[in-house]
Image 1 (cartoon, rainbow, N blue to C red):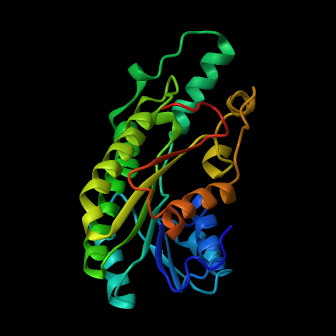
Image 2: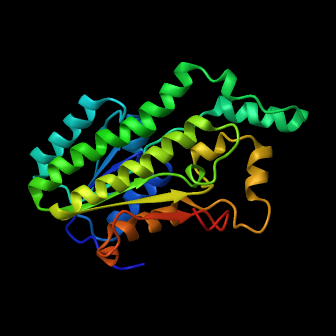
Length: 263
C-alpha cells in the first residue's frame, strides 16, 4: 500500500458507519488525509467510527434524500472549501428476497421472487442504490468543478454483471450505478475529475451477515476466493481514487475473488 498518497486531501465517504465505508475512512486517515467527512444515515454508528479517527468528522445524511445530500456537500464547501476524494459506498440489499431465495433452495421449489416483489421493496433499493448515487455524483461534480478537480469512486456490484437469480432489483440498481458512473466519467474528465467504480463480489460486512447461512456457504464454495474483507475492498477503492490510477477513467474494477473474470 502506498504511504501518504492522500496527504492533505479532503475526503467525503458515504456508508461510513460500517463495512467498506468505515474501512475507507480508516485507510484514508492512515494514508495522510487532512479531513475525512464520514457520512451515514446511522448517526450513532458513524460517530463510533469517527471517534477512533483523528481527522474524521461524522456527518448525518440519507443518500436517498436529495436535499440532505446537497446540504451535506454545502457544509463541506463551507468548512473546507473543496473536496478532493468522494467515495460513495452507501447501499442496501433486500433481506426478504434473500430469504425467499434460501427457502426455494431448501424446499427444492421453483424460485418466485419477481412476482412477489412489492413496489415498496423495488423503490427502497432503487432510491438508495441508484437515486442516491445520482445525488452524490451531482453534488460531488458541482463542488469538484469549483475546486479544479478530484476523484470519485462509486461502489457497484459484480451481481450487475453476473446476475443472481431472485435479485432483479438489486442487480438493476447496481447496473445503473455502473452505467451512470461511466457516463459521468466521460463528462467530468475535462474538468479534471476522474470517476471509477469498484464491483465487489461477496464481502464480509453487515449486509453479508444478513445473508442466510446456506447462501453464504454457496457463495464461498468452489474455486473462487469467497468473502473478501472490508479492508481489502478499501484498498481497491483507494487505488482507484489515488494518483496511482491517474490513467484509469470510467473503469469497473471487478473485485470478486475469481467468481467470474469477464463482464
